Length: 429
Image 1 (cartoon, helix red, strand yellow):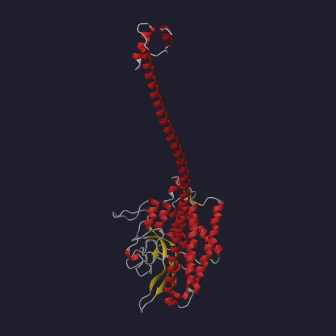
Image 2 (image 1 turned 90 degrees about the horizontal axis):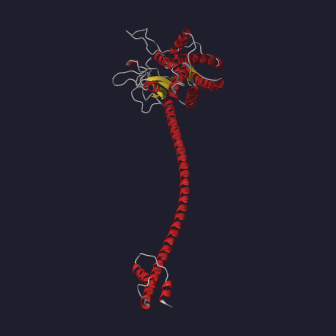
Image 3 (image 1 turned 30 degrees about the vertical axis):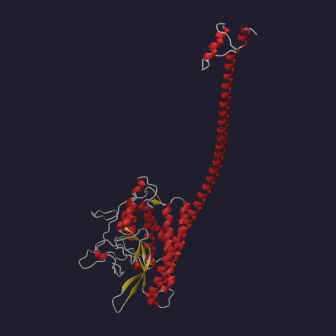
């Protein structure tokens, strides 16, 4: 093979790179300017082969690294899938734990509710036991627990009536002549007292202001105070309020009295119901209250009959069965000084020195003579009361009186000698 043929068979090589020297040699051979040597060509070819082998080895190492990285990637994917499954499992466990937690919380609430009821029942039974022991000291073998049950049942019926009205009474604009309102207010003053009645009238403005319903605690206090006054006036008239300001030497005999005047007690539940509803209607008028709907009014009337029956049973028990025990129902007058010994204020925690606004549930007291001394009244069952400060806070957000002497809607106007005595005697006694 001649030189021209050899040069024509050489493979084409790109310019540049680290082999530029070899490229120049080949070009010079092709151009005929440099003679071609078999040794130099073989040397160059061998060098290229070495470089190709090195490149192939480098490629194999790169391929191995790639395969290793690919394996690690697959392993990471597998770990990620396992982690996802574990997360789903943990999420399910968390959901189950949340449900279990909710069930436990519900169980705890039920437990606390039962516990509270047990404490309430224990407290009630303890009071009843103490009351029974106190009665048995002087009363012999009469079944006084029956009387305590009657009092508790009567107070519960009053509460049911009050709770119904508390949930259903709404404000309405007054639609009555002024003379009619004046008569209604005068009648209500004889039941609730002047200042309490004034508070009821003052809250009627809320009807014109667009307020939907009165404060529930205020409704409960008004209704229960009204029911207690009207019912107890028939059960035991001398136990109801009495002359709050009994004239004394030098006293003003024209000062207003908190007295519920009653005529002959109604002989039937039907007649008493008519009297009761007539007086209640007067309160609804001056308070701008309404019981909306025929069904609600009918449901309310159905609650009255059991309460009146309980009232009759209590009247019979006090007037006949236990008439020899010198027992009287205990009703605290407006403005009376609160005493934990003779009263309890269920809507006030830790009731301290304060005045009574109204009686929400009747108590029981007994005249006792000890060692030839003057008779004193002791509390057998404490009367349930609502305090003036509690009502002021409910209707106006103020408690009366404060350190500066400011007054709330209800003012405690009773003087010291008009408050209940520490031995349980009424101020009017």
